Image 1 (cartoon, rainbow, N blue to C red):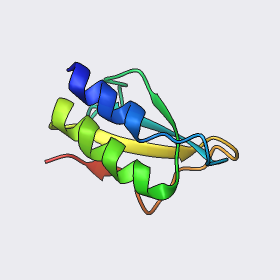
Image 2: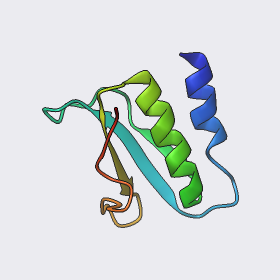
Image 3: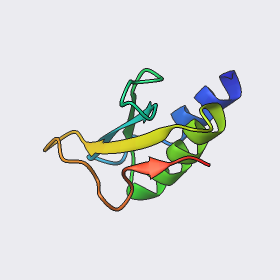
Image 4: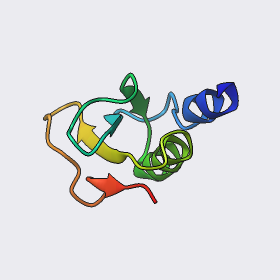
Length: 81
């Protein structure tokens, strides 16, 4: 479990000004994990999403932009397989 948390931390960078919230939800919309706040370029979103899917294989991943609260439709919702 800690290796996945470390990987999520590695997705964030100090050089980006955009922050995203990434959360894993069950099929009923209940949050499975504490939301991961990632400051990253959009490439980091995919890595964080894939990491959450390894921890929660049947989850629905939702990505929202912190600055405007909108869901990132190109990444979200994503169903883990």
